[in-house]
Image (cartoon, rainbow, N blue to C red; front, side, top):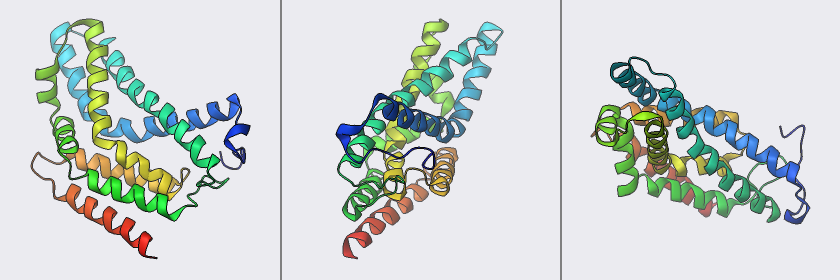
Length: 215
């Protein structure tokens, strides 16, 4: 995408087409990065639907669409943030970070968030699909959509800070995208109480940010 399109040099020069291109990019990235970590929940929901309704369609589709809708909405915020960062010249025309202080702040915020109560609460829900389904179950198509929204918000609360790292390492950094996706998948697949990897990641991110400030 960076080879086909260059962001305008100032925020005032952005056109509707620029916003649309950036939004599509983020929406595709969110789907590609978040769906793998949600498959266990979708699979569990599909199985329960088959038991309750005798079939999983259209309920599983509504649940999955609602889940993605949360991340598509979050992509709007990411698009607006990227617009401002380009306007401040904190992102290069290749969408790489060009402000060390910004990168450091992102790493420290993402690392510190790993230790917050909100992060841990959301992570617990993501790790226990059956518990989520038992406590949040709602019947019918509207219920499926509503549950997808709730789960999407839970997942957003767990992973939003990790997504922000893309602004620090380069929006189009495919290696970072894969690594972040694998980490989120691993973090959510571990049994409850196995939070060592989350804490280690938090410490490393904080040290990374601090190291950038000291350079």
